Amino acid sequence: MKNYKSFSTAYKLTWNLISKEKKLLFFLYIFLTVVISLLEIVAIVSLVNIMSFVTSADLPILPKLQIYLDLDIYSNEKIFFFISYFLLFVIIITTFSKILLQFINAKISYGTNYEINKIIFNNLTYLNFLNHKKININKVLSNQSKIDDITVAITTNLSAFSSLIIGSLIFVSLLTLDVKIIASACFIFFFFLF
Image (cartoon, rainbow, N blue to C red; front, side, top):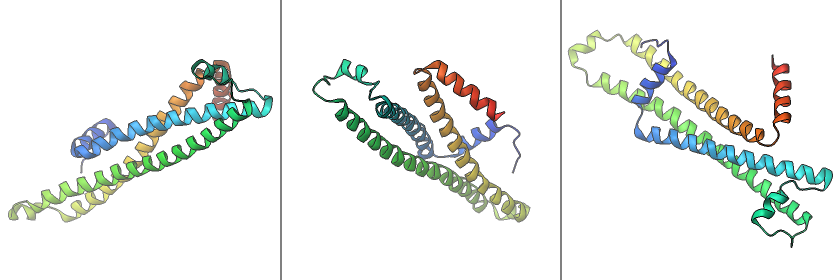
């Protein structure tokens, strides 16, 4: 088994080896990650409104909702309870979406491992009898164990990729709320991090 110094080369070779089903699952994984990001943003906005109502009896989202809906017939308490139930619903949907995301992650990583093992097994099985003497079985078994590490690498990389997308979209959406608060929070975070 060759050692690749570049991650991009290893990813390209792995991408070329996997089936179309795994490639479609990867794009479904990205789509579901974006949906989870949007659900997280909705949950944050709902939570901010709930906390604002609890502390100051004010709903910051109310003027924006009144542009689209006639909310004069409802009291602030009813709108507060609706936002609270809506937040609970969003949290439940987000939780199930994250479980589905991890299931797709496992399906991609273990499926890729299976497909690569199948390719190696087929190549070894259909060799001419005279070529079997040239194969070092110790190298084959060593490479087989290295392929199992692909599952861990793909799982870890997909999780990191998903977290990066979710974090980036949440950060960008928070920048639209108040740049000064987000900038000071980032400064404090990086100050304590480094």
